[in-house]
Image 1 (cartoon, helix red, strand yellow):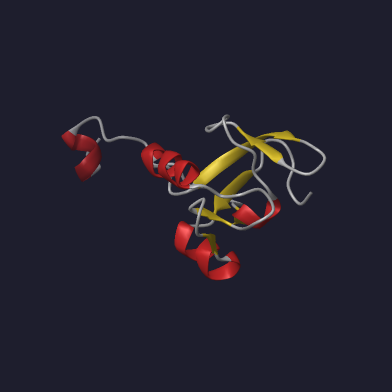
Image 2 (cartoon, rainbow, N blue to C red):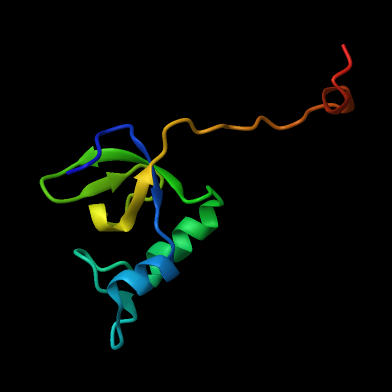
Length: 101
């Protein structure tokens, strides 16, 4: 296993996975270690998280993801470790936009 608990990782896109592993035509899922499904892709898109998720559990051959707990994730679904994720805070006033103090 490449990643550990609390690591921020970037999940590959459907197109990246399809190009790399192909698709099970009958099932409509990607043929990687644990099938990558349209449901997984849809949940990632709904989160609007820039495909960056947090490892919550590390099992012997898979991961549990904090933001999407209903699926099993494997190394081949993960693009990379995210080192310095920059979180933007919401702007609360026009003075923040102009940086007036």
